[in-house]
Image 1 (cartoon, rainbow, N blue to C red):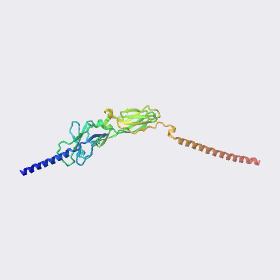
Image 2 (cartoon, rainbow, N blue to C red; image 1 turned 30 degrees about the vertical axis):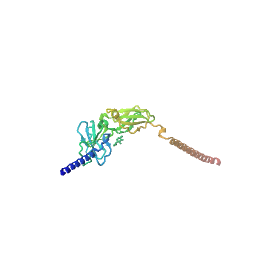
Image 3 (cartoon, rainbow, N blue to C red; image 1 turned 90 degrees about the vertical axis):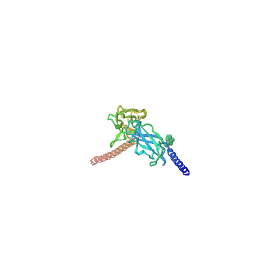
Image 4 (cartoon, helix red, strand yellow; image 1 turned 120 degrees about the horizontal axis):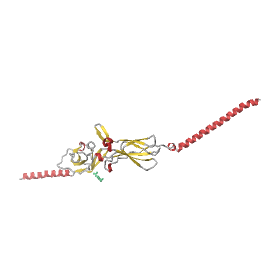
Amino acid sequence: MWKTGAKVSLLALCMDVLFFTHLVSGSFPRAQNVTWTSTNFKTLLTWGPKPSEEYSYTVDFSVIGQDRQQNPHCIRSGETTCDLTRSLTQLKKTYEAEVLSEPPRGATSDLIEFPHTRSEPFCPYQDTDIDKPDFKIVEGKDKRSVTLYVVDPLTALFNNQQQLTLRDVFADDLQYKVTYRRASSTGKKTYVSKTSQVELTKLDQGESYCFTVQAYIPSRSTNKQLGAFSHTHCSEGERSFTDVYSVQVIIGGVLLILVLLAIIIAVTVVCCRRNRAQKNEKEGVPLRSV
Ligand SMILES: *[C@@H]1O[C@H](CO)[C@@H](O)[C@H](O)[C@H]1NC(C)=O
């Protein structure tokens, strides 16, 4: 009788302990603000809050409707970011990720389902932000045209050992939008080019123009079509005399010429006088002797 009572209370204690651990497991905070951050196909999943020692995060991801996968770096980790650049291999497919709050590595829990938060859908090809391109300008001999040589930006993707450019990935879907204006005015014009070499013609002859370039992918949804603006580069145009030399330099030059003239005149005058004096002397001597 007595022994059975002890057994029952021991069982109750065990139940309590189980219940207690269960409660701890149940307090794993759910991940918040699960967000995709992606530029030129470098793709991170981020969330919060930073986990305590008591729990960790695991990221599951999949093409929507297909089997779930995991990235070995994002299993039971204390980080709040997961680099999925190399994991999202099917660029045109739409992925979904889920951040699970789990016990720390090595610990176990009797929870069957961990708290989890699902991300927004993400398609690398449609959604990755496009960084600013770089370009150089070459002015036409006729001074009425300019050619922009745009360097296709590199992506974070590799094919074997080779790093891919935006052109490698987007091919003909990639265009460039050039925004330009005369250096002396604010009125802007735009030009869309299907190639990375952009020739702008019929410019005002000899005028200086300023250009900025951004990637343009018309096949995407409207708010994702344009990439970041490049730096602005200006052509030189045909610069007038006063653009090339400052007013000070011109005044200085004129003064220098005047000073030189004055010296020449002074020297000439002095020389002439002396010459005449010598001549007079020479001519004078015979006269006197006569
Ligand atoms: C989630 O985002 C909201 C609003 O931006 C912010 O107030 C909150 O602190 C964020 N939570 C975490 C855990 O980062």
